[in-house]
Amino acid sequence: MTAVSLAEVLQPAVQEGYALAGLVVLGWEDALAFVEAAEEADCPVILQAGPGCRAHTPVPVIGKMLRHLADQAQVPVVCHLDHGYSVDDCRAGIDHGFTSVMFDGSRLPISENVELTAGLAEEAHAAGVSVEGEVGFVGYAEGAASAYTDPEEAARFDRESGADAIAISVGNVHLQTEKTDGIDFNALSAIEQVTSKPLVLHGGSGIPPEIRRKLARETRICKFNLGTELRQTFGNSLRQVLNDRPDVFDRIEILKGPMPAMKRATLEILNGITKL
Image (tube, rainbow, N blue to C red; front, side, top):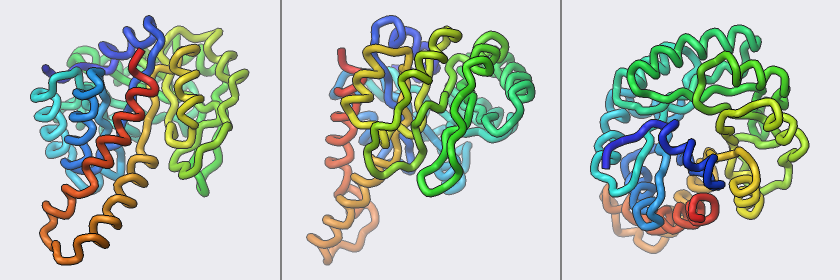
């Protein structure tokens, strides 16, 4: 199976009433566990390299790694560069094998956000790469506060940006370690009424599984970004492995330990939002 663009997997999700998981990758082991879980669930998956991953592993390296996994997988795999804060960040992703890039212009005035995203979308689409944008600002737990997406700005972005998907802010928060019921369905409905493109929620870890399922089935939300809850699974499992096997010192052997738990947690996520 070859790597696919974001647009290729989101359109069927919108039409058939399910959502996909954008899973935050930090290294080879978790990326492999995510792909194996997707193969077992028999559904597409989105492997995401965010700013933290890219600071640790250079884009040319992580791009090739994700493409290698995608090309060996038995299911469609999107190789997605998440939160590119400049057009050049996104261009680097396009140049090094990513099939989808997210330009994060959420801090910019809407006119500038639209203009930069539109220019990038033209370049990306010519290379067969999808573009995700963001309108409004998704805040961070114990960090910068959110700014809800303005429906009028979302409508303009939908019409003029050329983006294939729009990330919105309706109560979702990055790096949320506890589940909350903070999604504002009225705010989401107002955005849905004036847009037509697939919608994305960052900060999916803070959304309870039953709410994710409801959003996937009943709204145009068709991509959830998930990182924190899987990092929690990894950290808890790794501590247990080190506790149980104090004699093991080999890095590769140690990192194998948490992978079954990571795969199980990923399967639970995928079965909740992607399987019909």
